[in-house]
Image 1 (cartoon, rainbow, N blue to C red):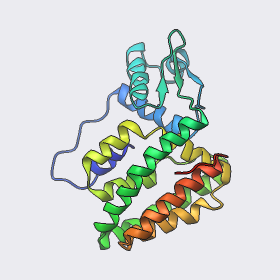
Image 2 (image 1 turned 180 degrees about the horizontal axis):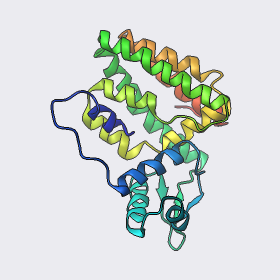
Image 3 (image 1 turned 135 degrees about the vertical axis):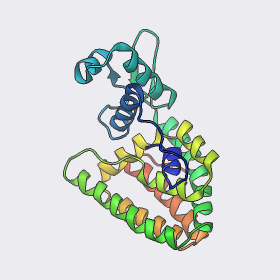
Length: 227
């Protein structure tokens, strides 16, 4: 679920939205597969395989593929179909530099806005994170984006959520790959610390934790960078 959708999922008086179309549903399936490593960076996503798997016509499949291209999760090189976007190490670092710039301010906003309800939801998100790491240990697909969804919803800043969804979903591919590679040996405790600092309203420690977690995420991918 994108961050903006997580914010929109908070209780509101408006009527429930209509069910998703086939193309929107399939686009979400493809997002989850890309983010959790079901499709690897550089791998081609073949329309024929999707038709066989889901029984959809070409129209919804092509719309779904275009949606993940628009998300920045995939690309459509000339005459090569749709492939999961593959980044160089330098490009990954540059992407995480942008991620960190937004993340540090997001944790500051979330910490400043912390309420008793934030503490309650913090306990819930930590349980969800722990379940994700347990799935990794069991060799199952991991999670993608629970922390950022919770954090960005806690900021209450819709524009920030939309910017994140438009430009930074791609980072979740590498966050997830980092967690899988490291089995969360260091990052799990760092995630917990970040959540606790936000729930406690500790702006300085929350920002420090966000930076430390980002550096560790890259390190677990074998990338050393100054952020």
